[in-house]
Amino acid sequence: MSRLRIFEEEHPDRPLQVTDDHAGIARELQPIGVGFEQWQATQPVAPGDPADAIMAAYRADIDRLVAARGFRSVDVVSIAPDNPNREQMRSKFLDEHYHQEDEVRFFVAGSGLFTLHIDGKVYELLCEAGDLVSVPDRMTHWFDMGPEPSFVAIRFFTEPDGWVGHFTGTDIATRFPRYEKGQAL
Ligand SMILES: [Fe+2]
Image (cartoon, rainbow, N blue to C red; front, top):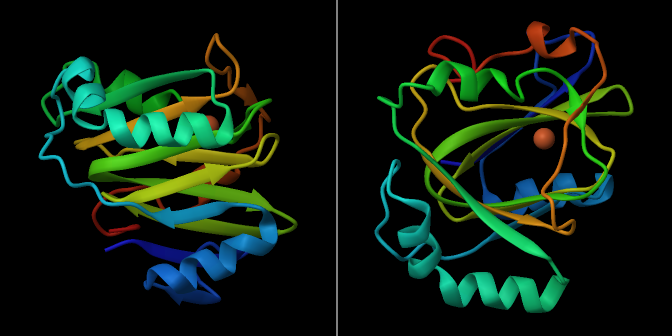
């Protein structure tokens, strides 16, 4: 089940608030400019399925979103727990960073942990299949797929070359729960 926990940045062990209904999550995220919608992840795809099969299964949804919001490229992240590069893939966006464009993802299988840092608060968002998340450009955040990643996400870009992470060099991500048993699980 999707879940939002909000923390003060000084208190990673003490969430101020926990919300696990979709409407409530969207309501909390709206004031900070983060979009959170529910779509139907109706096509049976599995973590590790090839990108072209996933793009084909979700063609209608992809075309609708591209037409509505003017995205210029789309790709797929599809990772199963036995992926030999999982450690490297996990580490890529585990530290605080931002992008110079919106980061938009539609989760169609599995789950991952998006954590946003803004105005002294930390918003930890557990994303699951059906969640469409839009993080605005320049918002600092990190993403943890866990030690045994299992998810499929379709990513939408406004720049044709995809995006680059700009790392802030802070250690805040290390102080907040990782997507591991006993932490954010
Ligand atoms: Fe990112």
